[in-house]
Image (cartoon, rainbow, N blue to C red):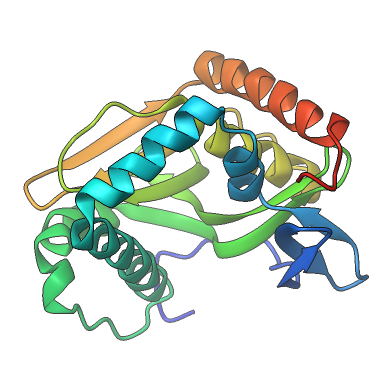
Length: 222
């Protein structure tokens, strides 16, 4: 890596490729073991009311919803390139967000992992963690980046995602992370949210319940 802020205790990247099985989207590891992704499970397990509300929002937003999705994808790509010490060229659509986020990215050090698949074969899911590192004087932990048009409350689904990734990291690598960060970049400001051990444990229990209900249903529906 060209970034001097990487740790000398880098976590090895697990091989995985995107895959679909039985109507489920997720990742397949090098041994052919498949797990559905956290995002797929959360999407499938939304209530009918939540799905209707989300579809209504997408229709009402139109081009704005597509723009937000584009900003999110570009933003994650730029964060990955920056943390790996690669050349970063910010497209105009992302410039306001990037200007707010960059000072925080420059405080990240002790990087051990960036954009890597994580599997939790025991509970039956997988994901792709944005980063494992330290921010300023905080201990090392999983860090998730979000891009938004404005500051909003951190949703329970986002906390469950972070808890799921943290548990998968601990099971896959034998680490003992018990906190996490959700960093939200908007065109006007940056919002750094530390999810402490108590809140992360609560979100983990909620996630375990959700993923258990997912696997208990008829997989033809999933």
